[in-house]
Image 1: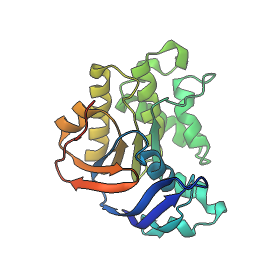
Image 2 (image 1 turned 45 degrees about the vertical axis):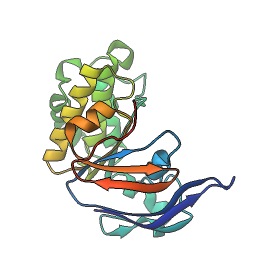
Image 3 (image 1 turned 90 degrees about the vertical axis):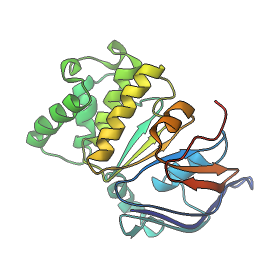
Image 4 (image 1 turned 135 degrees about the vertical axis):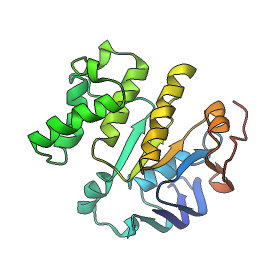
Length: 228
């Protein structure tokens, strides 16, 4: 599903963000990516999305070496990946329904398919009754649910969640994790970068830890391993 082969990233200021990373994530896994601030987690995510290029190494996703993808093919690569961010990144002038539909329109999905898929995913995340609300009319937890719905509406094979519970209270965060867990059980591979110790320790999923760009730990049913 995902394979990093001796991947390193050195920025122009000579900061080593990733150093010789070798990782394989199988289809259907749920993996937490942890480490102190500045460890390289954001670089790891950006490389998978091809927002930045590795300095050395190869990255295989769905049997395709994305390091060899032309710029023209990058949007098609990203359509196969759902992404959830800590800051939601919703369009303030669009209601809940239209924020989710926007992701489908970007892939030139038909109006018929949009009318079918959007209500389905809004129901999945528990927002059917809020479909007409604007982002400033719903809570932070509901905004993150919209973000999740938008991320999964194209049926991605991989879902990347970058600190999706960082701005949420503990109870709301657990609700988001329940949805992510259900999405994973349905077959989607989930990679979640997080500092949420309680969540990682309670879910007992695979944990990959990076420190100063180096892979220091990779354990099944792992723990967070750092102070809050």
